[in-house]
Length: 113
Image 1 (cartoon, rainbow, N blue to C red):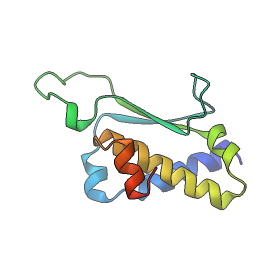
Image 2 (image 1 turned 120 degrees about the horizontal axis):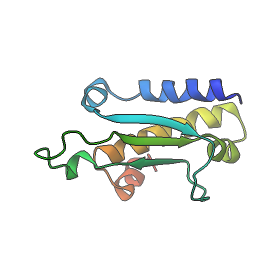
Image 3 (image 1 turned 90 degrees about the vertical axis):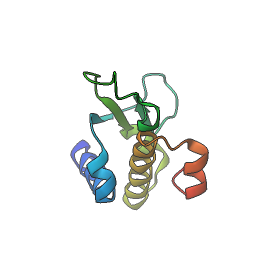
């Protein structure tokens, strides 16, 4: 799959986020990289301060949070474009949920693990 097509799928996944949640996302950058620098088999990673942990009295001027989607890691576990579409959507929603303070256990319960 081309890098452009993968990027398009990430955009499509972002379109799945309900509007009220999408409008609440602020100061977040979405990145696409080949693999995690830590060498782990990670599909996506949220780095930042979840909304539930922010102290807005001293949050001003903070660098953006990042959500990184790891293209080669996702492609490596999928056997078809249909599987890639699904895995990208799950990964994007999963990482956005971390921004809102939802932990892995709860995401697995909700089917976004």
